[in-house]
Image (tube, rainbow, N blue to C red; front, top):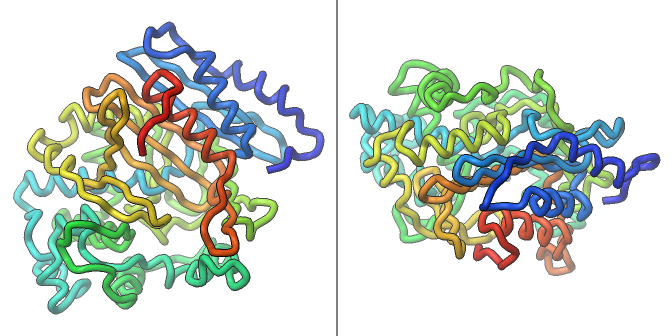
Length: 401
């Protein structure tokens, strides 16, 4: 991404150090963390911010700008759309209802929601399969956003439906119907899964069915408030009222320059990917979840049972019940990554809870496909990898995927 006219990158990076809040730590060097974060900005992300924790020591930093038009500096305390990181919150809420004997993990979903998942599929697909993406139910996004359907054939792609759906109010049953109508992507309960937002939208409806309230209200009272989060909430409308960055979508080069999608009706994802939070709150949530303060240890053990799942990008992720697993030379980390239009997050917490990283950035889908439709390598990917390596492991050695 080119630097906008009149914008001085050096001045911007100097301004971010004013917002960095390092504290002494034997586990990381604040200057190294800031340098790695600056590298993400220099590689092409307008703005990025993060919090890293190590045994109680905390570093927060930011680099770049929150707004390309005004050059407003990015800050580490801003609110941000966290995308599919929301799924861990929803999964924790479902597990609370499993503990209350209101939901059975291995019960067919069709017995509680026959109107949503009818017939043979409703009898074959269990709650567990929805949570770990082994239901075989397809993604609804291709029907809700027709411009995605032609990918990776670049000449036939268009960002039209991104703009057309900006203020569209989707009904959950409408989106679920799109996913079910798309045809199965696998046999229910198979050894591998396919990532699908349809699964979690069905879980949102199940949560509402057994609690008698909206999923957003239940998750707020029983997950967000229980974790002591002060800056995490579901949006009431298309706008984020608190200070936040603009969120720029490149749509694989078709939106050039990238367009601001920070104002967007989030009914297209609801409890699958609609939360707004801060990096500080996200680290607090995962720390308390993995400490057994949100769900019981037996539930947490179920959430940590992983299997291979194919992501939207075609990559393998080790997925449990709303939790992703990452193995590094420092050990195992748990968390989730998420993206919505223009906004992305990554949250990782070590199995012992001592080391944590949460990162947010305001550019998405920066890679452009080559002639075969495969994404071309981009400097942003290398810069992010370098930051993750140091933030998680405290050194520059390559972290395994």
